[in-house]
Length: 366
Image (tube, rainbow, N blue to C red; front, top):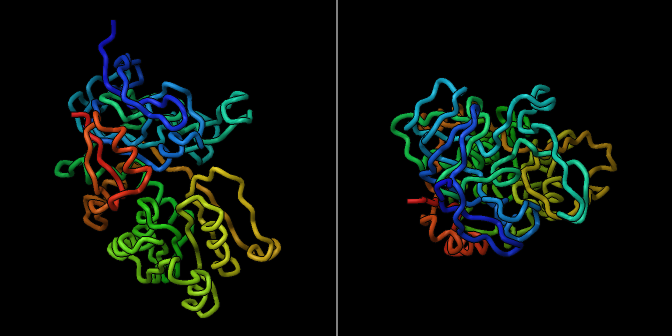
């Protein structure tokens, strides 16, 4: 009989609970990682609410920091006992999409009829943890295709310093990369949650010289300034589109980044764009979007709308940890709360309801 571990599992919409599950067996290409720190993502809240479909009994979570407990026989270049991260997206790098330059899109998977009121093939198959296979809110996680996905943590970096790398930092930076930001650009970033804050930091690293951060929470806007924002706008106090157009002399921004996943923020991100500008979309949308014909210039505005799934793989993780180690970005202020795995239901309640100034919570099994 397999030894057991504690894991947070999806029971039904509105219920994620702690349960005992077998510690996974390790195949030739796998690695068993003992989790030392993980966290809760906004996508996990979509899962909790039933807005994103996953199988009942699945272990949720996709942001692993830990120590290699056991290596598969085919995995070389790593050692048991080594501290590692793995990307939230853990592609095999063998699919057609991944070999065509989109490694996060490691093929597609079939949604059976009845799981979400629809059926057919859906992208995002590179996202396996807490989606297609058991995830990271547990004492152990099995990392598939470990040779491609495990990244050693540099000496001197703490779990909290690298905790954002698997998803939040990678996603936020991808928003800035997809926006095609050039030196001297003006960029508007809608929503300053953890991903939006990382997009703000990424825009500064890319060379934007006027970064406009937008949110309804003054504390988050203060942190946005720490991350590189030059101007902050609280949408509760002004007409954001009007203010952005004033700030740009009526030209509009070179790029906008949408980091919340709502119709209102998506539409505003489109309305502030200059002709020829890029809307970089990072939000996870749970309802259909509508593109207003005037904001889209009837399709004649030379606009680009680009979406992204968080890049994964060991090279992406290595680069992100290089940024942390260099001191160019400090994401420590994003980790605002700490919980034991035993208290994960309480952590979900806090995070899902956005109480007590929460940005990200660190979850520790021990």
